[in-house]
Image 1 (cartoon, rainbow, N blue to C red):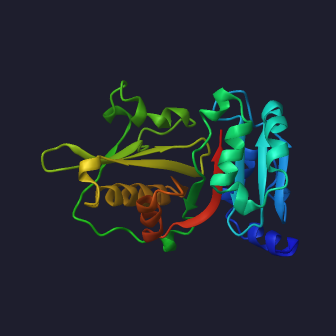
Image 2 (image 1 turned 180 degrees about the vertical axis):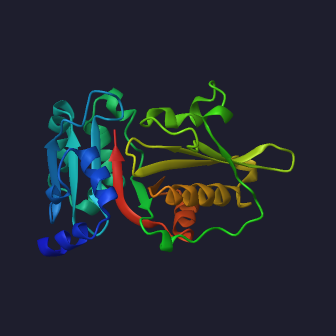
Length: 252
């Protein structure tokens, strides 16, 4: 793929997504190589577990940008510098990273690449048609000890009417599906979905993701939904609602 094609792809990217990626990486999006893998130290990477290594590949962008702290970059460079994008974002790439990383870094390494989807145009959203009625939860609705639902505490200060999560209940009032909303950028809202295993396949996950997506779009923000490559139900759910694959991620 030529550099011109790559520049055309990134030039058409929504500015909110562009800012989010540049903020995460610490580099301009134009830093992505037209081909191959570019490996760099970044001030955005810290010694905090889970933030020592970040690899992004923009969908249809042609190359990947690897950022990390100096010790991680030094360890992984010999193993991956001559890889192709396809090798890096494959079981081979994960295995090579795992072999070169220190034990505490291996623990945080993704087991497989993550697929990150976004909707930047409200007209692309296809709301789910379901009988389930998700319930919006604000800060006051979530007990302090439910740390997993209070991810929005990591966001910048939020207004009183900010929705932190959506729950979907069964007739017995048991929670069957939950979406938790978080993110550091005001224009990007990331969220994750959890469904009770015995209730899966009944549309609860679809209902809460659809509700969260609609609410985020109504706020003028970009919903960002990620799932691992092998999580086929989640990937299908994203595509069904109109999400588009935006970039791939490996983190440690």
